[in-house]
Image (tube, rainbow, N blue to C red; front, side):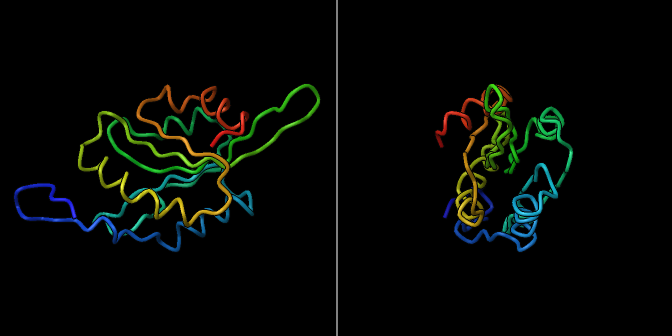
Length: 151
């Protein structure tokens, strides 16, 4: 338990659940190729990880524009890239934890502690990316991570 303010409000960080819709959206991305990315966040009472937005937009720049400057969220992105001379394209599913330095400390704590619930529920993630600023989630940075095979 963490105490976040002086009103005796405590939040049990182990009670965050992954909403069924969150898993369904992930399967639509992974198996159905219905989406290019999914943005996840916590519901208002911080008890469930829910879908904030889905998109089939192929532009990575559009995805980056969706990342809020002062709020945390999770994202799953179907990252497609060229392999090399004549080898074609590959696709890897990337799990992104967005926790900008400018986000409130409480929010960063809650998102950090509830990440594992979502991450464990999503099977088929090829790579994890932690972003605290836009340089850490830039296309080239993510490309280096997924193409080198590191997790």
